[in-house]
Amino acid sequence: MRGPLRLGVNIDHVATIRNARGGLHPDPLRAAKLAESAGADGITAHLREDRRHISDDDIMRLTNELAVPLNLEMAPTDEMLDIALRHKPHAACIVPEKRKEVTTEGGLDVVAGYPHLEPYVRALGEAGSLVSLFIDPDREQVCAAAQIGVPVIEIHTGAFCDSHQFERERELQRIVDAAALADELGLECHAGHGLTFDTVTPVAKISSIVELNIGHFLIGEAIFGGLESSIKRIRVLMDQARSELEGARSA
Image 1 (cartoon, rainbow, N blue to C red):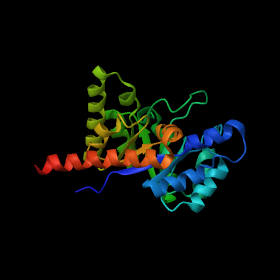
Image 2: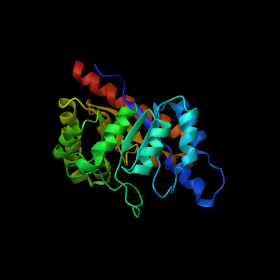
Image 3: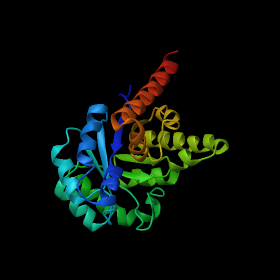
């Protein structure tokens, strides 16, 4: 039997608010520690090439002061590899990055990018980080990720979360199928991007997914009800979904 579904909280957009007018407030490290106390199993932070939110200093402080694991999201560039090798985060998730995008627009093309990605995967793994690739729920991409040697994939759930109701079942099935294939291939499967109170339950009920990473929505909800409250509510929804799944299995 798998353990409880883990929750990783992405604190990037606390830094976005801080950077809107400079200074030190609000502090992403403070948000990360509050997320710890509210039930997060890990913290995710994306150090982008343009440093639009998380900074190098944020990564240093998170690495040194967190009690829960840090998952560093990073583009496959020499600069980001050097930073990851210096700080040695618990986990490193390689993500696609376009300078002009507002947020990550989709998953990596591991099939086409295999020769470029493989040295980064190898170097991060040799340094002791748990390496994952952020990919769309696509069979070819899952197989390529397994071939490249990562122990973990993270499935991009954005298309599911953004879909209209009549498309949602199809997009959910893509995630179900990709997660099942990952499990068959011996990959640990995570998922994230765009998940909300309304969309988290169906994804949390996919038994082969062991971790969800959620950020922007939780930071946005914190404006209205507080960060601790938003994290606790998503945690309850995740736990309820898993409890219903286990109940259905044992019935």
